[in-house]
Length: 371
Ligand SMILES: O=P(O)(O)OC[C@H]1O[C@H](O[C@H]2O[C@H](CO)[C@@H](O)[C@H](O)[C@H]2O)[C@H](O)[C@@H](O)[C@@H]1O
Image (cartoon, rainbow, N blue to C red):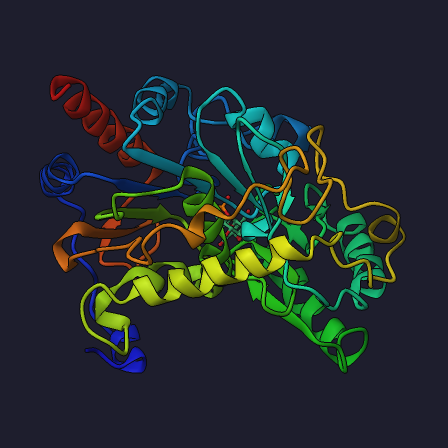
């Protein structure tokens, strides 16, 4: 086992070897593919023709057009579960992935739906959102004085993004903004600051992709009534440091036990899902933000109940009847891969989303040949 601190100082991970990842994928019986969205499944920002418009709207995240075919193919496999796990809002994922048979995990996993069902929330109760109004105010000011920057209000976070602004000026503004926030609005607040290379994000404490994956898995396993343990996991994304916990969640090398450990984690997740199911609740509305207080709906397929999203009918929890062995992951069957980032706990690297396209094309092709 590698202690976390030591592992974080590891030298550069190797590039993902497509043929290895695909070989083990083909050999496995029940696969889980967890994919980030921004800068993983999107076109690179610097693609000719993408940059230059004055409208930030033109820059809304869009699925790389060449990925439609491969994704469709991979999602059609009953033995493969595909999850897009993103910081984006539900509506953004709906627009880009609604046509595929997959799972969507929006806002870093705080909202979840199978594209055949409705949104539900996996949010822990009592998320503190008291900081939102004062931070929003600061974000608005900085957006106004930083041309081509914009900010996005999500249900569990606020993101100020300057990736289309003059970069040096954006950086200075970001530093200024953080100083301002730390000495004022968030000085005594319980909020996580997540700094990207071109963004500043404030999140409710505890909102990370790794924290959410447990609950997401619980839901998926329950919904699919999984009988064959998941024996292959690919987790690929351009995730910020805070979200790297999703890579380590599955990694036997980061676990305190031995091989196949995540089983216990998923057991906990499933128990949690069951407990929630027994006391369906609306998501926490403790926020003092007006929009939060009014509604917790997420996109057209609004959240009706916290967990029993689909129709409100409570099936007997299938997870009570299936084995706890939902994950049987050997070290060689786990592929975590950071896209466009090098300081990472992921095992492998890919440089850009163009490489992701090549990889998923090859994987889909191999699946098709193997039918
Ligand atoms: O959550 P995803 O949809 O998979 O997206 C990954 C991350 O994208 C965003 O961060 C990236 O872009 C920022 C500029 O827009 C940049 O500052 C950051 O360094 C990049 O990693 C988003 O802000 C993150 O929350 C997502 O995790």
